[in-house]
Length: 347
Ligand code: 13P
Image (cartoon, rainbow, N blue to C red):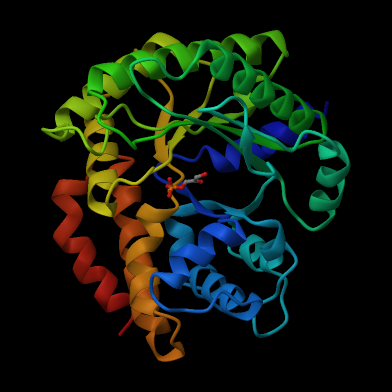
């Protein structure tokens, strides 16, 4: 294991006040997002949309890594520059989603596949410029789920993935996502999150993962999207910090949340509230690795039309800048000024 190489990567990825853009949607997922706007999901449309994101001027001040889909890793901008090289030139690290999606584990739950041949694929991805990776495990919450089988099986897969990554010079992003879908309470989400994260770190320990060279990408502790009343910003911030404090070793340098179906504004406000509350007992950086919460306004503004590219970039720039402010707990105070600056940057 080339620890020096991993340390160099994590130094850049765990940079205070910056976060990671998740732009690694599978073709099915991006197909659904495009379809909602009546945009056809062709190779060229996907390429154009990703080019819009990666060429947004000034984005490197807020984004230090981008997770790419395998298809995007080999694509180029209109000038013929490979996307990983384009990102590198801006000081943004290219990463790669390496899991192969979900398959049934039992009648109600899923497990993530993709371990077979992973080491060989990483060699190819490295040659194309990627230096960190992502693997997403998914858990459903109900009164009885996630089951202990789902927790242990997915935690083991995450740990095996993380080991293969570190062994091949990749910093692993370990992503256990507890879905927001359902009518579970915040307390039930906290309980399920704590059990899951506890098992994940037990497996990471058993697999001898270098915690200082990984990133945790968890969901926030929040009531289900059908639960009434919804969780307040303060409740989410307090409950999430408490669960993380109980489960995440202090050696982990950075926790980069997923947005998981929260609105862009909620995801920013929750991150901001946590960074304001954070104490020495919660020593990790708290940042973002959002997909939808960074992209939604940009995607809607773009709407598949070349003449909307500038306006879409402005929308993306704004969310990136506000989330970077939230990494420092400065979202509320800077919000209006940031909006004005975002406009000016694109005049
Ligand atoms: P969301 O922020 O849209 O949940 O996506 C993050 C991600 O990378 C899911 O794997």
